Image (cartoon, rainbow, N blue to C red; front, side):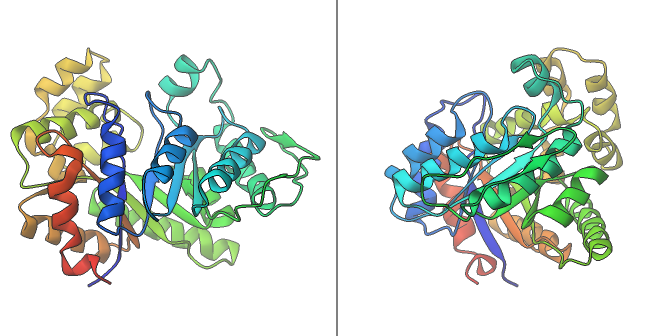
Length: 327
């Protein structure tokens, strides 16, 4: 069985920010077909993408998900076009609503109406990225009159989705849907909901991408790194149910009480990563990849742990050699 197996930079909070550049260089060296570049607490996504493109040979880039209540459509279109123009690289974009912490606490913006902003931003971006003017006066997004002066990148648009309104936006407005940190079972359920929403809209089902942390032959250090990345999701809507159904209800309840993150991490079993990640010996990881493909995932973006595996080379190399990654 074959599928698109892409790479993603981790932006791990407990690792040097430069790990992202190392991972990107390895993904390019190993001929991965796409590199997903998110945005968290370190690099600006457009700046990081430009540095990555200038330091690699050919790997296409997908930026985001970018928070639609933080960045407006014109800002996003200008950023994507700038990276494409300065680097002569294929650049696609992903949109999301992000978390309350990022939007409301870090940026001081409101998440009210974020579902409407997601759909309306996707609607406005399509003509902008194609070099046309966007005229939209929505409930959350308004723009009129602007047209790119740079060559239009004609980028594909992905929408990060978990809840019903985001899935609806992906099914009706996007070229792809992306999900993060989901089990194979949850990915299958999300695929079904995406297909139902696309059917109602009379559109083909957009491809589904799953971002998954990965560690082939992991050390305890790399397992801890991946687990630390799960902590913010344990109490989040949708995710809490998924982790509870997987047998981690006690730690979900602990996380809901908003303790210090270190307390949650200390209570989190190391094997929890097996629920939402590609972790273990190569043969185990290959079986896990097959489970996601059987669930209807079209692209897997592996985000390699870098603790004990500089840049994630061991993981990226091992996955690239699997038959599922050769199609």
